[in-house]
Image (cartoon, rainbow, N blue to C red; front, side, top):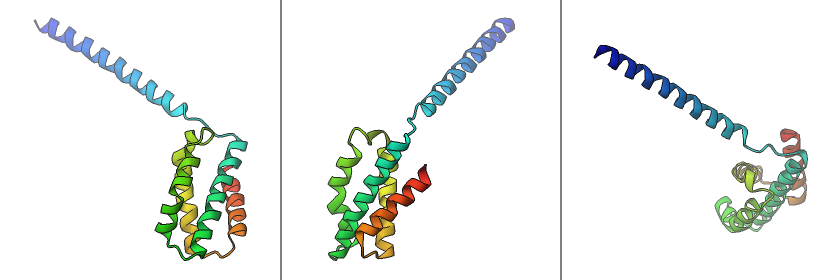
Length: 128
């Protein structure tokens, strides 16, 4: 009886070990399967963030507050983030967009074109 219980316990331990190894491999594959953007994709993403920043600053110049400007641009931004070329990176783009718009609002930038160009250059420098 003790031998049977020991054997059963040993078999269960081995099976659980294999199951955990399999799960670890699946998790590792999912992590490594995330696409890494190419240099051109990074430049395109930075240009998108710069263009959205430009539009946000235009809204700020018209007297809109941060939340108002983001609400007014939300459909445009979501459409851009969901485009095929950006879809794989949409979460990262949303974070960059929110940070860029907040920065533009806090900096009280008056020239949207210059601010957008600076945003694009900074983004490319940080991500390439």
